[in-house]
Image 1 (cartoon, rainbow, N blue to C red):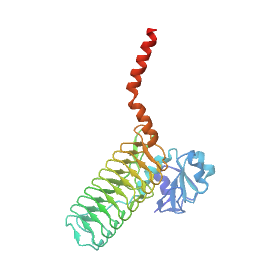
Image 2 (tube, one colour; image 1 turned 180 degrees about the vertical axis):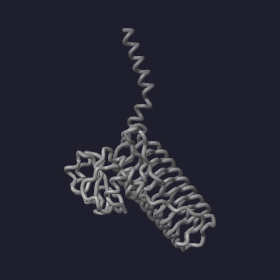
Image 3 (cartoon, rainbow, N blue to C red; image 1 turned 180 degrees about the horizontal axis):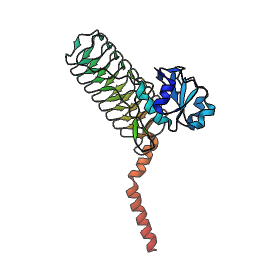
Image 4 (cartoon, helix red, strand yellow; image 1 turned 90 degrees about the vertical axis):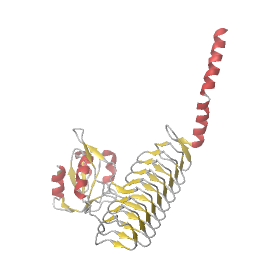
Length: 331
């Protein structure tokens, strides 16, 4: 917990309002309450100020007259946000062995595991060698965790979950802010990863924690090997994702989606329920229900097949046109 005047000092901001209020945490502008700090990055999000319930907000000077709460005025909002996240980041306590406060209700735990403070492990779980489970993690019943898995602090794993070799849950997301000198400043990710029931995750797959809210993998999801799920992603129930897929930050997939191997889904895209994406496609726009393929810009699969048919005939079309051109010249 910090007083607002201390936060203003941390980020070198001009404080407008009550300097004595106490801030417990950071939150998005939609969810922030009176004991929380949020940010509005630009005029593009000016409308978000209207219903703001946060105790304070980081903004630029041009938004000040529309601000309904205490303000921290800066030139570079995203940079200030990046800086303050590190003050609210809970640092893990590293140790060897099993912390005395851990609640373990299963016997099949490898001796080489590291299990942090206040971890809860349900019944009938199996945890393989060299697995690391950091503080505050909650694991349900009937969970199988193979060797060399890492579950970072405060993440939640449901019941009947299978984590294959080398899975990483709750790694830092890729968020950075650029200062005026062209230097990057890392954003500390304060959200967690929430994994539902009956989820299976393949070898060396990585799921990043959310920036302020949680990355969510809903029940019944299947992830193949070497999948990367970035921060703030939500995967709908019973979605299946093949090997090598990369999903950018803040992507939402509906229920029962299928994504083929090697596909890339750009940040902030939304896919409706029952969307199918062909392997190696690039998704760069929101998708409604359907089967899509796109190695340049994504398109409906039926349209892509028609385009591909014409592309495959280009050589013959060119030969035909050349013959016709020669015959015209000979006349």
